[in-house]
Length: 293
Image (cartoon, rainbow, N blue to C red; front, side):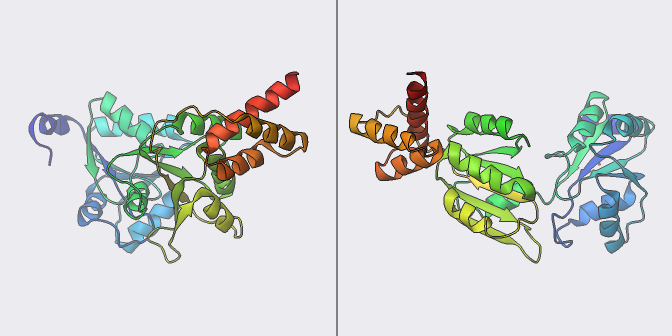
């Protein structure tokens, strides 16, 4: 039931229920979510095949319709019209809470813009589940979700987040996880992170350590499942660090030996206790000077 002004609004139109579903283990669903899915006129599912299994398990006979990133422009307005006529609709994603890194957010926005009542049915969320076991600071965090699937743009997005003091939550697909961690190491340095996959499932895995350690572990196996990566924030504001003259000479020598910028910066940061990003920037500047000389 909706209280106050929202109750009056709900009597004019149907209600869009934003229903959280399990992220793996089918038992991770609330009694209210099951009741809502049974009572609504229609379930708008990101993946109908996936949602059919959930409905079958809990004997939910409500009709399903597909609503996803490929058809949201055509299906969205149709769902809004049905809501305007007084029908109740539940929106569900493949796993977790709709609207978080999925097209459900677009339908929710349309409903709000059309004066339709939107009600949350809370439950599982991969980001919060991963955060709860990460072992890093949890009192203040930033959800970044999926970054760009294009390497150059993704690196730029990481650079914009590098000075963030809060714990950061990322999502990544299995076929990009290694490249993501390589870029994370290049931009953020060797910070403490936690990587999770298959949470609540049989092969649940939580790996904690420095970026380079986890890269080494994951590089030795075939990546499977969606990943949640949680990285610690920058503890202190970044300060400019100057390189001793003799260190500059050593860097120039390594550059002349055709070592990569990343390898030189990694070596310098470890041996001389300098932040990786400061070392990387210095090596890059010296390389440019040498090329322009």
